[in-house]
Image 1 (cartoon, protein in one colour):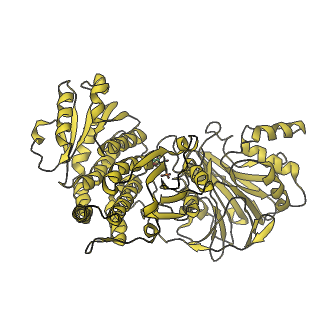
Image 2 (cartoon, rainbow, N blue to C red):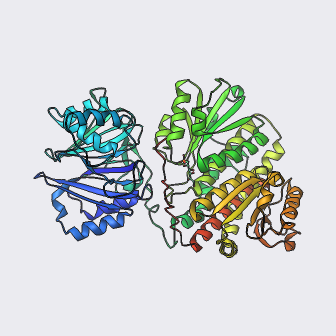
Image 3 (cartoon, rainbow, N blue to C red):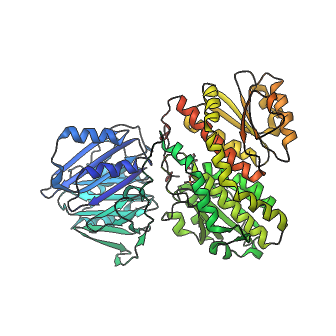
Length: 608
Ligand code: F6R
C-alpha cells in the first residue's frame, strides 16, 4: 500500500517535486522514490527508505540536471508485502526496462500471474505483486500503452491505483484504478495525478475524482478519461484553499498544533449549524432523514472513529431515545446481517478512504439500505458514495493518529442526536440546557489549553511507567478507551482501558505501585461510584491520577489531579479529551518518540 503521485510538467523547478512528496509523507513513510523520464528516453530513478528527506539528499548528491526530465512518478510507501528495504521500494520495472510503475494496494491474483509469466521465461528480481504487473504489461504489450493497459486491466484482480510510464513514449502517463483513491489535479500549466489532495493545496484547487474502472491518459498537456472503452467527460470541482495546513507554525509537532486548533474547529462546527438564539439546528442533510421510519441505528467504524461512536451510542440513546448498535467495520462485513428497512446505517471516517469501512458501505448500498456518512475529507471515496452525509469541518489532519477529527466527529454526532431529539419532541428544557452548555464549549477548551503545563508536569512524571490503566464509567468508558489507544499508539507503553465497574472482576489483580491508574471522574451521575473505585485502587497501593471537575471537594485526598472546567457531562467529554491528547503527547515527547509518525502506522488504511 502506498501513496502515489505523478505529474506531467511544463517547466516547474524540480525542487517543488520533493516538496510535494514531503506533503504526502504524513500518509506513509516507510520509503519513497522518484522516477523521471526525459524526451530522449532517459529514465532517472532514485530510491530511499524511510524519510523523503533521505530521498532529497540522494537526489542532491546525484547532481543531475533535472530540468530535462518532464514526466514524473513517485510514491511514499507503507509496507504490506515484505520488509522496508530498497529492493522493495518502488518503482518496479519490466524485465526489458521499458515500463515503470507505481502501485497502491495489492493485486490479489499475483501468484497465478507470476506462474504464467515464469512459464514464458520471465525472471523476477523481487517478490512483489507490483513487479509482476510491470512484466505483465511488457508481456501483453500490443500497439501502444493505452491499448495494453485496457487488456491488463482485465487480467488483474483487486485492487489498485496504478500509474505507468513507457520509456519509449516520454510524453504519456497512464493510470487505472479500482478501489484505491485517485484524483486528477489541474493547474494552469500542469496536470497531476495524486492519491491525496493535500500534496497540491498550494498549487491548485481544481480536481476531478476518478471512479473505479476508469482509465486516465495524460498526454502532453491534455488528459482524457476512458470508461467502458469510451472517452467520457467529467465535471471538475474546486477544493477549499488552505495553505496553512502543511505549516507547523511554532509548534514542535503537528499533533500539538492540531490540539491547539480545536477551539476554532468547535466554532466552525457549531456556529454553522446551531442557532444559539432560537435553539434551532439547521442542516439540509439531517432534514433529508426519514425520521419517522428510523427505528434503529447501526454504526460502522474503525479505530479512533469507532471510539467516537462508542461514546455516541451512550449519549444518543440518552438524547434521541432510539436504540443503536456499533460495529467494527470488518467484523460487520463478515457477520450475518439482518436486513431491516427501518434501520439507518451510519458510517464515520476521518479520511473517507478506510478500506474496511468503504467495503461495508458498498455492501450496505448494494442491498439498498439507507446510508449516512460523517466524514472529514470532502473529496474522499466515501463522501462520493454515500446517500447523505455531514462533514466534520476539521481541515486536513496531518499527523498520523487522529486528533481534532475525533472532536469533529463527536460534536457532529451530538448535533445529530440533538436534532433527532428536538424533532421527536422530547424534553425541550433539557435540550435547551445542553445547547447553552455547548455555547460555552470553546471557552472551556481554551481554559484547558491554558493550563496545559499542569498536564505536562503529570505526564512527564508518569512517562516511564511501562503499564497503566485507564478507567471510566458510562460514556467516559469509551473516552478512557480512546485515551489508552492514543497513549499506546505514540508512546509504545502498555496501557489498558476498562469500564471502572469491571475493576473488581479481574484488573485489580494487576494493581501495584508501579501500575498507575487514570480515573475519569468529572461531575456526573456516577461520581460517587467512581470514588469507590478510587478507594479500591488506593487500598492496594495503586497510584491514581484523578481527572475531576474544578473545585471538587475531594481533591486534596488524591495523589495527582488534573482539573477540567465544571460543566455538564457532554462538555466534560470534550475537555477531558483535550487533557488526554495533551497527556499522551507530553508522555511521548518526554520519551523522545517520533510523535507525528508513529512506527508501523499509516494515516489512511486503504487495505483490508
Ligand atoms: C488512531 C487513528 C486510527 C483511525 C482509523 C480509522 O489515532 O487515527 O485508529 O481512527 O484508522 O480511520 P478513519 O477515521 O480515517 O476511517
